[in-house]
Length: 178
Image (cartoon, rainbow, N blue to C red; front, top):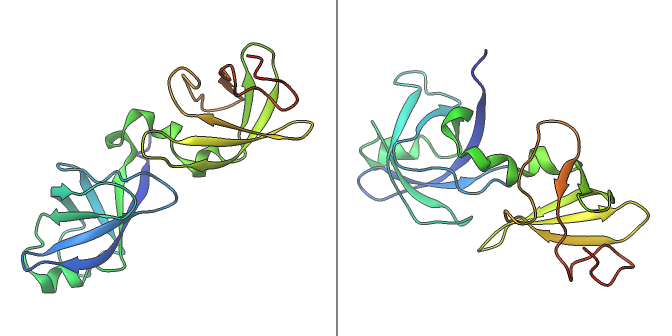
C-alpha cells in the first residue's frame, strides 16, 4: 500500500535566535505539529535534508505554535523556511483526525440513527472544547451538532456518517425529539 501524506502546517515566521519557527495549521485542521513528529518541508531546499523531526512544540490553537526543528539552529536557517509547508505521514497523525478534517467532511451526508433523517455537513467550526458541525437538513433548516463521542462515534470512509442528535438539539420543526 502506498504511503499517504497530509500538509498540516505552514511556517509563518522565524522567531528566536535558536532557529525556532511559528507554524500555523492549514486547511481548517487543528494544530497537529507535536514533539517527535517527522515532517517534510515543502518545497524542499536544494541542499540539506527534506525530512526533519519536531524537537519541541509549544503553544496551542489556531494562532500558531512555536516549533523547533532538527537541523535548524539559527535565525538565518529558520528564515529560509518561512512560507513553506510541513507535510506529515497520515499514519503519524491522530486516529480521530477524520472527525476534525473539514476537507474530508464538508459535503458528506449524515444520517440520524434513531429516525434516518438526513443532512449534509456544510461547515466544521472549531471550538475550545470540541468541534461543531453545521448541518443543512434535507427539506430545509440547519442543525448544529457537537462532535463528541455521544453524538458522533465513527466516521466511515464512505457512505453516510451515523449521528445521534441529542435531545434539545432536534431536527428543524421538532422540539428536540431525539
